Image 1 (cartoon, one colour):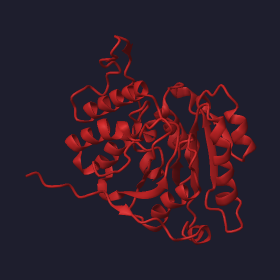
Image 2: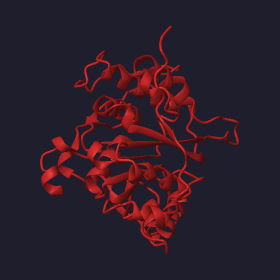
Image 3: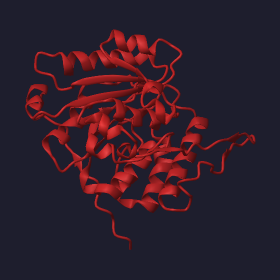
Length: 306
């Protein structure tokens, strides 16, 4: 019988308030980076809560920097974010010499380069359930325990009005693949979740898959670089957001599969061309597998930060 892996530790939600957590910062800074593309309906309220409760509250400044990374929005996402207190950065304006790139992973990589915090927090901007407690609960372990480098949020994902459940790609693709090839990561409850906090010192040493496979790649590479003992997860409660169609999830699953195959050496990580996804009607969909290098290997990055 195969031994069960040691579960990635689950930490209880903090009972500390903002004022108490500010005292644990000890000179460290926190950047909240929000990737956004056509999220005008939700980005404003998210930014407003962060600014009011975590930046300009009477109990102290927990979050030092709030940046919305506009990834080619065609609506008024940028205006809504600015109006509610965020600094807005166009993704293509960050490290322009490295090229525009595309995909969520590209946005996250550029957010590390553009932000200044010692701790970086990511949240998706299609959330309708967001509360400042998401950020409070994720940064607390990083402030209180120097042995933790990465905190993943997990949550309950209720059914939407069509009866569709959340987490389909997680349970049908990501978890079986992690369980088979990286079993120590299989106990992470939401490996594909966009709510995550990490130390800059870790993130700038990791490559970033540009597309849907970014979360899977970051987990595997973190495992290899520092081990699961430096990963933790915390309950964020309820998460409600816009669900994707099955066709979109199929593309997502194909890119996650490609990331895992590359990480176990069955596909060449330097080859940007992999077999496409072929849908039931014969449509050929490219599988996007390009990666960004660790920022410490990007010419000028470390000098620029210094």
